[in-house]
Length: 310
Ligand code: ADP
Ligand code: MG
Image 1 (cartoon, rainbow, N blue to C red):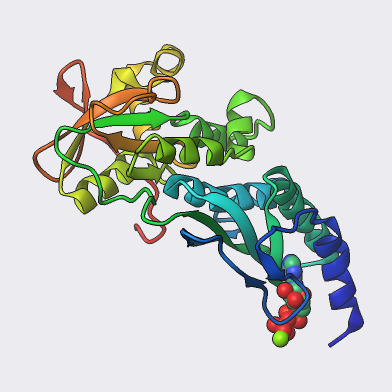
Image 2: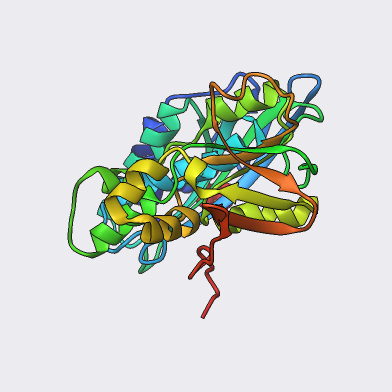
């Protein structure tokens, strides 16, 4: 194998990564990394793939695309309530320049959240894509899950909804800057907030990557409850409905993906949630999700993103 592959890995990734986690025994550079866990903790692992032309437009900056791919992966750890510790990054790059840009984006994001780059793989092929595996830790038995909602729980939302989808649409329409576009390009994983919710006793949470309706439905189905959401209670409803009109705002807010907010449920007596999130609904008897606007059920044109939908 040509030496340049290894010097590029060093130059684009390894030398730019700043953090080594205290529970790492053997770090990046060997055939695998080795980690131990603090006592009374569990390992939390998630993986995500992002492909140019699918997860980001061909003319979107690669550095930003790589940064948001890492942040999207970290968002899954946030949804479980974990502390983010490690990442393994497999990159397919069409050129040295593309590899450099993706290396910059990956390491910027990992450094920002103080996550160690524990390993990876680098492949030269005629496309650009990243596979990001992330791992974290949390106290035994405290992970927030999708199947832990109960009838009578309140439903809460932390973050924004629909703005990233609007930003992507604007980008595809030729606009290259502005507030909505920054919601698409600057993904913020709610890691601190996820941990705070878990500490407050929240046990049911999902991060919203495919649209609120679709992700709420995962909780509804997995927990065997009917999640009833009130459109007007969402934090960005006022501004969005003023800007787009109620009908379009509803569709965008409920089906637009990739804002990476946290949707969670908790018993009504749970303290401290008001300061972190907004109460948006209740868990009823039934299964799945329904959204209401002024007492009427909302009919969605499209429920969320599905890679295999025709
Ligand atoms: P192997 O052949 O043993 O699978 P590689 O030759 O693919 O390993 O990689 C050599 C070393 O470089 C490994 O320690 C691997 O973790 C690291 N590495 C490769 N690509 C990346 C990357 N994109 N980011 C971080 N580390 C990487
Ligand atoms: Mg090896």
